[in-house]
Image 1 (cartoon, rainbow, N blue to C red):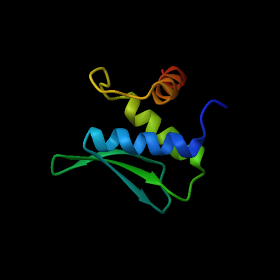
Image 2: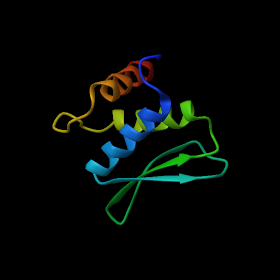
Image 3: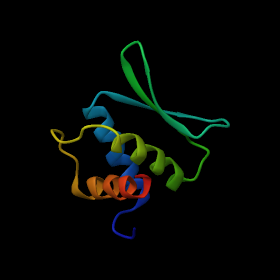
Image 4: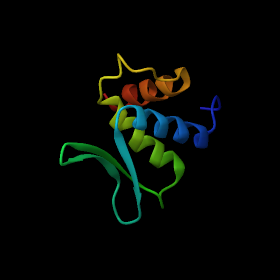
Length: 89
């Protein structure tokens, strides 16, 4: 995955989340992270003490479950999400 830097992918995920009104919460602790809803608000919790690749994996996995057809997703980010989808399913 030498195409795009992990930090840039993280920024693209943050921008996509904002567009989709999903809050990304970065916490510390003994957890993997994932999507949850509280009071009709969507959150993706990411463990900020995990390596960036693991954090990107959580974001990619959760966004791969969403319908992104009608949302502009930068090509590099879409490719990353699709790559994760192929590894999950």
